[in-house]
Structures are given as structure tokens and as C-alpha cells.
Image 1 (cartoon, chains in turn orange, brown, cyan, green):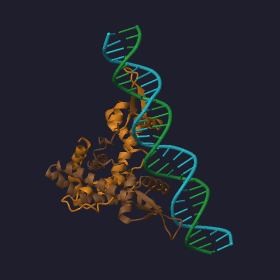
Image 2: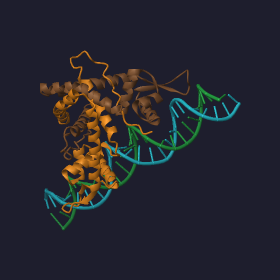
Image 3: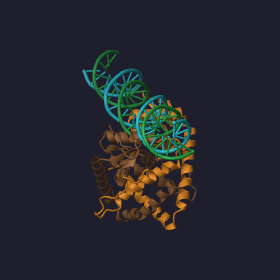
Image 4: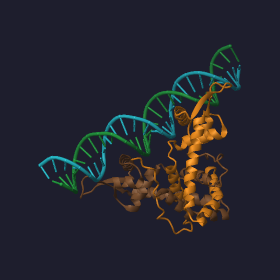
Length: 158
Length: 158
DNA sequence: CTTTTTCTATCACGTACTTATAGAAGTAGT
DNA sequence: ACTACTTCTATAAGTACGTGATAGAAAAAG
């Protein structure tokens, strides 16, 4: 039995009464969506691994410590992540000729393929889900996306 | 250094061209919001632990296997979760007099207090963030919440 | 009264993180 | 150029959190 992670609400029974009845539900909703989307593409990559791979694809070769900062993990953690990516042939370590202390990490073509495959699968599934909503619901989500992104940015850089 | 988990976008550069340019961003947005919200309340409880505790508060004492199913984890995983909750005095094991195989799990008052504290902290922070948005942005998010919840439900029960 | 099923715990394993520390390679200071 | 500091990566040991396989007790079924 391979259970897919579920976030069963931690529901917002208590602390109503204030004017802000919607905020706890936003958190709960995001948690639920997150775990649902994870179920949609469980292609054997952890959050950090997938994110690191995406960074490598976007920005090209990066040194290990840079990656650790970018992903918000410690340097030893990034060493492990890169080691696992390398073991799975999704990334490769390279030497920096100008500074022999550093390790440059690059995405491989297999890594690129995996990313593209994950994106394709995920996009298809989310499209299928959105298609099952009522038109005005899908429109509401689309209309809220910029604001949600702004919120995420605010939350990340306080 | 205690890094707070960040999901840096896995950005949606590729595969545009279809009419569906918004869906990948929904996934990315949810990922970003999720990790942002996690940073907001890092009060030393894992996702599963917090969720289990919330279930126990909502539904009262439950047997261990029931909890495992509800949380979508295996029974051995739930044994561990309960053991940690018990070690931290947030939950307690009880015997079922009518069936001596089963272990009933209950939330303690300390567990209840922790849940309430987490909710209060989280609500305050999210409120503060929403207050920094433009009124029409906050309104867009509020308007999309029901649709997002529907989407989460659709994704969870396919 | 045996057999089967249910329920929990335990074992061995893997992933994903942490802190603390070591070791090699640059960068200064004198 | 030699010592000293700093930077970069790796390693070690520990914790949290999950898995599958299996054991053992208690209940249910034959």
C-alpha cells in the first residue's frame, strides 16, 4: 500500500467571530491543493530535488553552496541532494578550473527529460481538473492567480 | 542556520504554446504558498503530526488504524507518529475495554493548546499579509476560495 | 477448538534534513 | 614566502518521517 500524502484539513472550527473568517481556510485550502498536486505527479523526486533540478535547468551550472542558499537548505543537505541526483544521472558534478575548491553542478539531459515529463503530466491533470469546474469557478481561480503569487512573494520576503 | 523550506518556482518556462498558459502557474503558485505558509508556523510539528492532532481534536479518540487511513499513511507510520505525539505529551494511548487489541488515541490538553496556538499565530500572519495586498487582490483571492476548495476536493477524490 | 482475520508493534531500510567538524584550496598580512 | 584567516565541499552522527515485511496477541468464524 503506497499511501499518497493527504492533508485532512486541520479544519477551521475554532476562532471565528473575528471579521477574518476566510484566512484560515486559505491556509487549509493551500495545504489541501498542495498534497493533491503532489499525488498528481509522484514521479519519485522529492520537493527539494525537483526544485534544485528546475533551478539548474533555468540558470545553468551553479556551485553547490549557491544552490543550497537558493533552495533554502544547508550546504550538507545540498551535498546529499546533489549526490542523489548524480546517482540517478539527473545531474553531474564538474570542476571549476578557476577555483579548484568549488564543485559546479549541471543538469543532464536525463534530468531535463524528467522535468519535462513531470510538467507535461502535471499540466494535463490540472487542466483536466479545471475543465471539470464550472466556467465561473475556473475564471475566479485564474483571476486570483496574480494576487496569490503576490501573496506568496510577500510571505517569502518579509 | 535553520533554513526555512522554500520552493523556488520550478518555473514554467517551457511548454507554452498551448492555450493553457495558466495551469502550470497554478501548481507553482500553490507550491510557493505552501512553503511560505510552512515558514509562518514552524512550531515543531510535522504535517502529519499536526494533521493527526487536528483530527483527534475534531473527532475525539480514534483507534490507531483508523487514524492511519484518515491521514493516508501506513499503520507503522501512524504508530510512530502517535509515539512521538505521546512522547511530547500531545496525545495519549488508551486501552479499549471492549476490544483489548485496539489502542485508542486521544489528544491531551497540551495538544489542544498547541493546536490553538498554531492557528492563532498562522491566522495573524496571513491576515497581516492579506492586509498588504491591494483591496481588489484580496477580493480576488476571497472570490476564488470556494473554487480552489472544489478543485482540491476533485483532485483528492478522482 | 482450530483457523482465520484484525490490530498494533517491531525490524530493516531509504530519504531528507539537521549540527558539528574536517580538509583542501584560495586570500591576506607581515 | 609563511603563517593565518576565510571559503568551499565532504563526512559523521543524529533525528524525523516514511516504506514493506513480519511477528504476536486478541477477537471472530468454522
